Image (cartoon, rainbow, N blue to C red):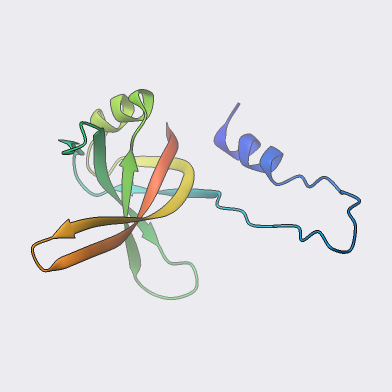
Length: 123
């Protein structure tokens, strides 16, 4: 299933009948991005032993001049393998979610926002 079809399927809502005292959480952390890879991806092994492949995606802004450069992380074996074969200026589509990562730095706790790629597709 393509990332576009997968995203469309995820967005279908199911109506639930609940009592007045039950709160429904309508949160959704699902995104689809298309852009150009800025440079070849890099692989890291974290102190925890987890492996991640990271790269940046350049996306042109539609409303105004300029671009956004987003950090993409591939955590699963499949997405890591695909990410390592990407070349700079290659057009891709990424489906996934956004997460805030925290770690201990020499100056204290640090954090950054990162896109977690579930699927990477060449265009």
